[in-house]
Image 1 (cartoon, protein in one colour):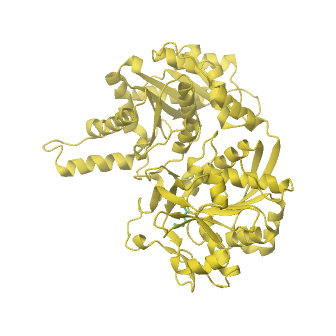
Image 2 (cartoon, rainbow, N blue to C red; image 1 turned 45 degrees about the vertical axis):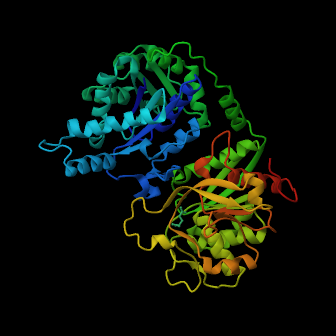
Image 3 (tube, helix red, strand yellow; image 1 turned 90 degrees about the vertical axis):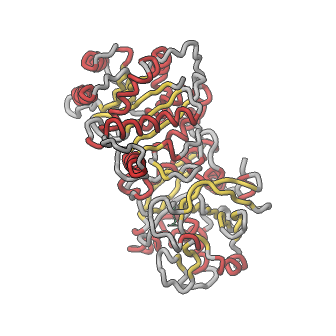
Length: 542
Ligand code: GLN
């Protein structure tokens, strides 16, 4: 019998529902339970793939090629799961399915309504995750804020699930902001009280309330939250500010949250063991070294645009007991002031992330040139890989105006070009080359030293690739493609053997990086930055 935990949020968005949901999952895992997670996004987009990262943060990519909300990344990192498209539910997806059924005649003769047709579709999708994953507990996080119009059908669906699944098989967790006033230093619970009321108006009485506050709430605030929320005081928990989000399961467990949940869901005798997680958190909190990395990107204004990359760098750092300090630099700033690129001298490594469209690309190319010429460790991901090819073609192979046709469709040397199968694609949603694909690694290369094998599967999200017409020229001039698709026609990894660490991939290693199992390319990059800083003649990898 699968049990269901529902997480809703109040007062404002970005209150930490994703981290809370992941943390609850982690606590339950530490008690021997199998968990899976569903993220509900009440927007009308069918998936996150068509949204600008500046508005919504990064698009996360699953093994099966789902373009999902970035919270799935947090679930995968905390819970070491490989989720699928089905784990992210949107209004667009649900309505599309209901309308397709209606057109097919599945509801023939009936008037199709939000209740029951849309709410049934939502429930059946949540339950399908329960069945398909073999989980003991399915956590469902409802995105947005309680009271949003677009969230209503989802709240209605989870309300009904209490009736259908039973009290001991369902649990509602509500998290809301408890601000502390600057002037009086008072903790204010009124906004939280209002959001609990809003939830009740829909018919959901929370079983647990989590106060999201800068500091641990005091007993007065706790008493008020319990009283106005109509729950016992031992069902109120506080998620206060911590140094790293990976601490959240530990602080909530300490407050007795996992014990409370297990009792409430009738899981007796579930002993917990969070020791491995604690060990990882300790390494993060007590680093022995520091590495400074410049991330030269186009969405530098919003850290959420690069969240998986940032986390993967931290995981790599933890494996070498190093704190990784990432400075975001808007690549356009190098275009306005070309001499500004010199600031990159002050960093241990240069990182070029994913990206789309022409804006800021010349600045990124300038940064790559600087890394190559000054032997500063370099890692490029996806667009970073493609622009490294452009830079090499221009400045080493002498193909002066080499470019990607994404940037200049009339480039005289289109070293990066649209993939052949993309030429006929007109629809934008879910039509890139997506998800995990097999890659063959060349022996005696840096890639081989990092991946320790001849075959890997990595996640992708792109439309362009290295143009095979220029392959010989690039290789003759010293660029090594150390990873290729199985048919050898798709370039996946590049490296420069005479460089300390110059490495880039068409795929996104960050999506498979886990706290205690850092992705090899991110680990390799951070380790190389550290080794070079320590004056070693070449990097060594564990
Ligand atoms: N814009 C490039 C492409 O579509 C790179 C995409 C990316 O960086 N994810 O191929």
